[in-house]
Amino acid sequence: MKEEQDYIQDITEIRSMMERSSKFLSLSGWAGVMAGIYALTGAYLAYVLFQFNPDEILYASSGSSDLQSVILLATLILILAIGTAFFLSSKKANKRGEKVWNATSRRLLISMSVPLITGGIFILVLLSKGLIGLIAPLTLLFYGLALYNAGKFTIDEVKYLGLTQIGLGLISSYYIEYGLLFWAIGFGVVHIGYGIFIHFKYER
Amino acid sequence: MKISFDDLHKAFESRVRLGIMSALAVNDSLDFTSLKEFLDVTDGNLATHIKKLEKEAFIGVEKSFVDNKPNTKYCITPEGKKAFDEHLNVLEKIIQSQK
Image: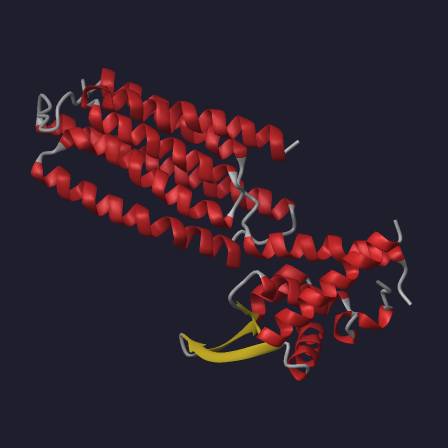
């Protein structure tokens, strides 16, 4: 016959199993901080080096090579941020004795990828039509939607991070002239704040 | 209300089986490898426990092929869900009654 302690242990394990098997919990706070730093650096470089600061929807930068440089820069930041997130998450997962590529991380990535790929293609279309001014707000919007969607499969904070990005995206779509600034706030400052919060809440 | 320990289903006596049911209760379906990773048990051990739960008709099996490799997915049946929920209720009552 089992003891009371055993039943309490049973319930603890049931709870832990339900959480572990439905949510990916190895997201790293530091990855958020790093992504924020890349984004701030990128926004600064785009502004200072390439004078990129779209102030209207049909924005023509001083030269097409500048626009190409900005796109290249943005792609580089994206790769760096994703790479860091993946690296730090797999480190954290290993430490917790989990595999980084499991049923929960797969679901997390799939739920993110639908809004992200939709947004990515949509932004490429706008780029080809010269609607440069809408690109920064739309990256915020679609990224926010992706996070909100992914929030079901990881820690709840990701959902709120998503809502924040959606809000910033909507505001900046109205105030196009501050697009780069809002982009830097969303991808930079908010990421850093979120990362620090996650670090202190879950990683200490 | 009197709580009897007999209300606890025999199938859930094992931690592994309880773990399988917990994981399947919150997932539409899971394949063998995912279950194995979550539970941290050997193939043979997991297979034995799965068979037992299958016999009780608490879990269902869905066989398919992914890239020509057999892929077996497991899901909780309505009976399994009901039994698991009842088991949880009994556990809760036992703990409350002893407080």
